[in-house]
Amino acid sequence: MEKLIITACICGAEVTKEHNAAVPYTVEEIAQQAYDAYKAGASIIHLHVRWDDGTPTQDRGRFEECMKAIYERCPDVIIQPSTGGAVGMSNDERLQPITLRPEMATLDCGTCNFGGDDIFVNTENMIIDFAQKMNALGIKPEIEVFDKGMIDMAKRLAKKGHIKTPMHFDFVMGVNGGISGDARDLVFMAGSIPEGSTWTVAGVGRFEFPMAVMGIIMGGHVRVGFEDNVYLSKGVPAKSNGELVEKVVRLAQELGREIATPDEARGILGLPPRA
Image 1 (cartoon, rainbow, N blue to C red):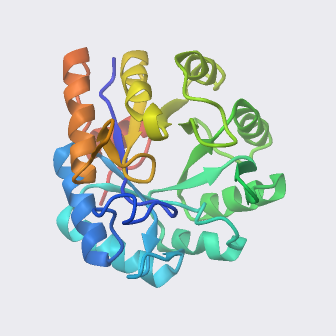
Image 2 (cartoon, rainbow, N blue to C red):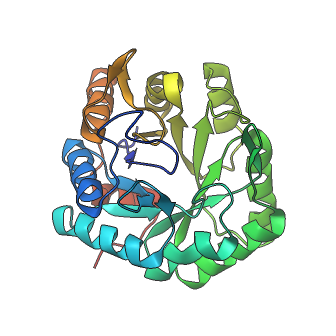
């Protein structure tokens, strides 16, 4: 079985210091949390950014500051900016970080109800536009899906040439409005992607570590971090993203999976070597 790629989603756009005081807002806090995760074994930093007061932003300059600070501490890590941003942002806002030409960026492949009146909108034309702009900049999309129909959308758009193959999927499991985080659901999702694709599972809330164990056993890859879950175990807040990554590393060791370095992750994902 190939080595395990661990992605750390260090802050997201919705979780706040009220949920966990260690959630990073400032450039320094984001860089430190990225370093803690990297040092623990994460090869990929899935990146949202905030203003110092915690407000989520897709501002190009803020991403540039944060990416520079992360690379200073983690020179070989893969930084994967989000193009999801936060609910209600325009397409132009959401796409700002790709102008920095990261190695990867997220490509959400469907619309999802996030609870109440919040709708995370990704129309077919938006997905095509985002994919084409990433293609033009040489960025590998991480196909982020919240349900089976979004896999089907990605497959259709790949067949039409809008998304390059082989694809790398991120199954977000247990989010409100999306597929649940049961073992049955992960088996269903993993069995629905095209042959030759790779995948990561991101369990939200209480599903984080059960899905991580399933991902390790099934030969997939794993995402953990404050964006998805702020607890190390029930009722015990994690002190850092690094603690969450360390737990995945321990689980992987018990289950016989070695951890991929960033350069090994590049090889698995088909990314060119970092210059």
